[in-house]
Image (tube, rainbow, N blue to C red; front, top):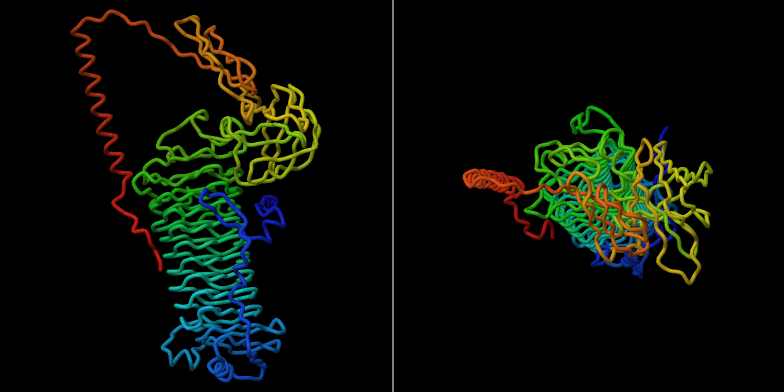
Length: 604
């Protein structure tokens, strides 16, 4: 059974049909400017082309037109098309024309010394042109090529085939590639030494190699594309700086969903559904402050015989042999939704220093499910569930009712969106729920009594949350929503709760008291109830509005009289151990630090 189709991040018509950009705070805001149509030309002359024209005759019409003219393909089908565009033109179709591209170099291209074949080739003089509403098919090297030209708009075209790529841009900037369908080429879209270009709402599927190739690029926006079922990778990011990859569905590709190679600097990868690939993310680059957060990384599949070692497949993310960070500017990998991958949630090839992973949502509340799916070498050692940084799921309420929410400790947290198949409360099924990028999901309930057991089912994986404190719908005048988070594991309930949300706070005082066996109790209030030490008798002060916090006990060893000679020996031993630790630390820093210095630019 293929569960991947039930998890998608494209949740509303507003998101699908509007433009979003990242502001300085790395949050999305609506971009109301209509950039995609800015190059559509108000023309004084329209040149209509019939299907009985030869390619040389059509080329002559292009050559003899004036900048700002429209070239209109008037009939349904054209053969052996290979056109050089050397001025600003508006190229359109009156009848959804199908253009069969030529597999031979045209006379015009031969005169210019061009070796590749193509349907359309835009020169630097063609900057500002629009090509819209055509179907290109055939066996040329490229469907559309742009070399040197800028501000080209490629809109609403259907491009099938291309021995090298469907769309290829080189040494260019400020282009828009929007609402195109690209299939059956070698690569779907290739950007090489390109910046400030937008690739938006395209369907890029069933290409033989990679869906989108971004190499030597800077400040491009890749947004709301469907990149699926390509033979090798979904998106390749290589030698890339300050690109935004946002809200894309990157699924069911032959190997990696997203592959990072070379140098990658300050790229923002957010709100994407990167799922059902052999490896959802293959991080194999020298990273410098890249940000990968609030993505959905699910359903990676175990397939052998790819360019990734068989030991590393079926993983949400693999840190490859070449993965490094520049000095201390690590990849920010946090607040992603990671789970139901066939083998690994995170995997390391062990040839690089340990990786610092932030808090992610692993589809359980205590980390036990996740810890069994994370390779210990990611951290350089085996860690416990308590050491793993994770998000938790709890429940709160407002004037609209009770809702579920993800939390990072006591703070409301978002993550990659996902679908809950069933929310079951005390045996009653309340149906499915969509968890949005804000980490919240709603269901029709006005009260959640203490002691209730909430069972969450996601693609056959279930975990339980037990409610410690009743959660009730708030009146409009009430604030500070109740929050209840109960830790659980895949085998049952762990009776430890965490107070979270705006109602929580620290107690006014710490409790302390002597317990048995030289233990001292210590607890700090996180909610309405005081903290309870494990073995001591101290109570904490009361404050805040969350639930009970379990304190920790610390063993106190009584100091014993020690002979001076023994003390000196101990001091020497301590000094020796400290020296060894310092040498190891300096060696690790040297290993993790790279000589590469970011030059600040990978393209024009």
